[in-house]
Length: 413
Image (cartoon, rainbow, N blue to C red; front, side):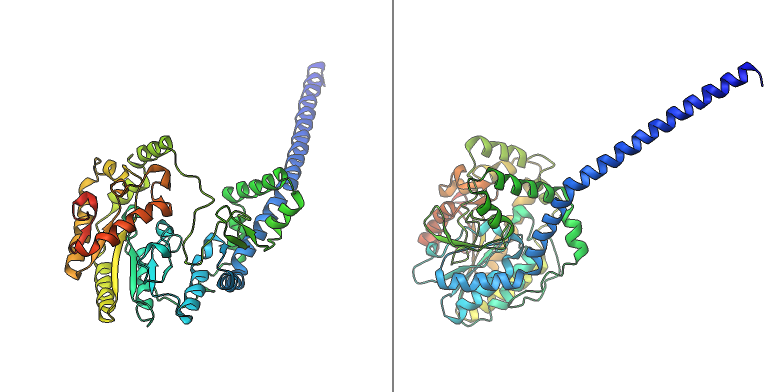
């Protein structure tokens, strides 16, 4: 072996040792990184899994307890956003037994601001609206509640802006209470606990605790879900039941409505930004209209039969297109989807005329005197806006014809 061979071997050994050393350093670095990440992330995962367990597996008991508490106190019951249906089913059946309700509101969160005092004094209303409650669910609810002897007045919300009346889905069978409505496995809970939104949610809770004056008390409310009564900014007593937003009055009043106390109103600037975002091609509203083939004829047929049953029991019904941000609908009518929206409204008008009912169109809320500050987003109005709309409707409805009615159509004074 000559000197050149020895030199080459020495050089090769040097480079191999250098590579191995570097690989070893990389492995140590990766090992430390994953250990540190696991130490940080494991409590987040366990915390989110705990919240998921509480929200899903203890749903029935907590909602029944919330219903009983509200029946006694008439306070605000703060519950998980995922479980409105079970809670409100308990509530309205309790009210039916006590003959406390003859009017029911069906819809999604866009009409949760409808309150009992907005109806004529001789009516006793309960707002049965649910989060994300599409038209096929409304129909199943109506078919069940029309058969209840105590109910005579029905309000039915149709959210074209969310696409509900256009999305044809199988109409389910409604059940009195739905404690087992949602079958959730541990795999589902684990998968959900690892999502980005839930990780952000957990750190928000940690920040809430760290920034609180009484950290121990806040920790107990967030993680131990202590159910103590407290007073909201509007003077009403409230209590939390498995809610992710403790001590914030984010719940339902005795009449099923909500006060939206945890939501800040839109400013004029934010309102204009919302409208600008709503009319772009990628917005949910433009996509909804562009994909639409109009109101489902199957839905209209089922609703027509429900209307006939209501009239046969000497009841009344009116349909309601929830209010949209002032100026919002007019801007939509300037887009390429104008004809689709006008066709939807024509279909509803023809349906109302054929069935001899009124459909209160509040899409152009500015015609009723609503302002931007009475909205939390383009399709959620605060109770103050809906109050203006209902006052106008109930004052002049006897002079209005059947069909789609609103001030901007010139048929509602």
